[in-house]
Length: 338
Image (cartoon, rainbow, N blue to C red; front, side, top):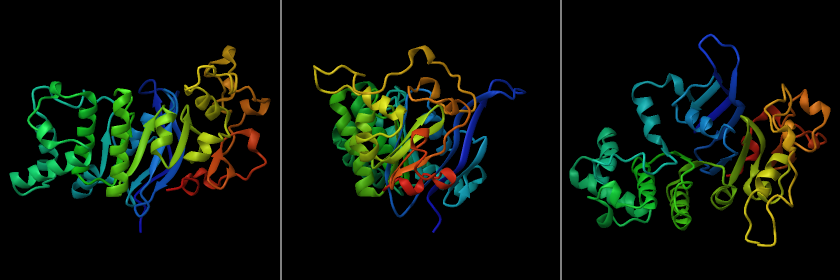
């Protein structure tokens, strides 16, 4: 059976001009697989500019890779045409960060849900369409009688975001890309939206790629995690191992920035200390994090370290772990548990 979704050595570089050779690499040599028979929730984490959203746009087919391939059920998504492309568009869905931008203020909620039903011919009658809408709204914890017929301004941000999840559920997707889905929602509503995502995975077998900078929500929702920095994979593995015992200095920095419920603890006191004098983008061909890393050595500035397998389900791209074996082909599939 072909893999559901596969990244093969994918690199995306944005050039500064049409004839410019120089550019910014937003994602570098990224490889992983999502298996159809083993649905999972994978978090892609990192600070702003790490390449998270670029990865999401590539996965959705909104932009093309500079190098490498993205395959859906064994076919390069750039080559999909006709029915195959429509199937990809239906089975790979997204929930974006801003729950307000998706809605046209001149239409009721019904419009957002009926458009995909009509476009993909999911119902043969209005009654069947209404039944599917009711089922999808109920699945994300909303009462259809309280939602349908209303305009966007009559709903809260949490309700709108759950409606976006319901819209994706209507299409019975195989993969859902959730790009910062709770960052613009009140903290009191985040748990509801995250539970809706977990319900999609648990009850409908949907694999979810959860894009976030918030490791707290990632820990509660995901099975595995990939930590990006300037387009490169710093660390990856099962969520418990990476969050509880991070092996890369950058992951340690991210985790140390989490606000803990302890008034006597100051943020940053238990983690590494960043070289504030070297918060630049220099580093040449070496480790992307070297200019900020307190453990950096001369060789870190000249050669990018490979992914070392520090545990069965955890890898880190750091010279501190050079005694561990190198992950073959830098493919994350074997270290990302379902």
